[in-house]
Length: 271
Image (cartoon, rainbow, N blue to C red; front, side, top):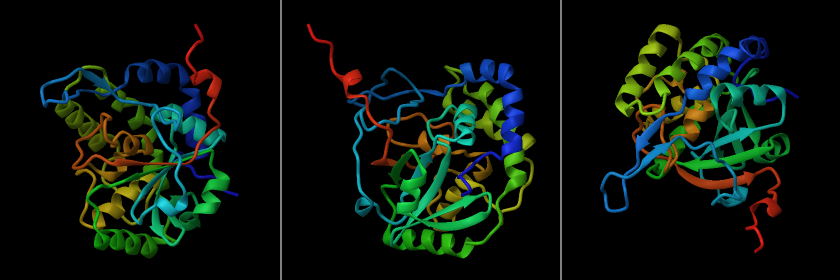
């Protein structure tokens, strides 16, 4: 069975050959922002959070708690997923949409398809849901209509091929203490050079999610969907630091599936 991939296997192998350079650039790439205090005053410096565990302030939820339009982020234990997470400094490697009636819409190597929630839970090691807090039933229906209209459409392999150099170069924009507006402008500038002009009738996973929301009149950002990866969607959640300017932070719904929690490791030390 074909696994969810954001980078193609040849591209992943190429990335692994660049590992020394990658480690240098990735080590410094971590967007920051001044997080406001509870009274609205300027607070402390906040860094992008990579934490994604129900054992760290999260919760486990069931399929019945999902709502149409929810954004589903996943990761598995395969080498493709590991490579994607390393390349993007993220605990997730794939993005999809819950469209209701137990169905998830996603863009994979074979094209846009529908898959049951049960199949996703069986195939993935981590499955976590996020929600746009202002989505209306009409907009959720529009997200579903767009998703269903794209089923069978082709995967954006060309867009993915351009992502490897872009993923590395954008880390220069995300060095600590780079102001958010400067970071946003820098990433968009590099994207304009590296990604060029693309077609909008083929999608990779996170691009598909962004385009579905845009088609429903509820864009998550005005940034080009081709520069957004699954990790960027994760960083759009409440309390995190997004890489690009967003219109609305996403709410954490919960984990539908998570790796086993090491209870002993989370228990306080005994006196």
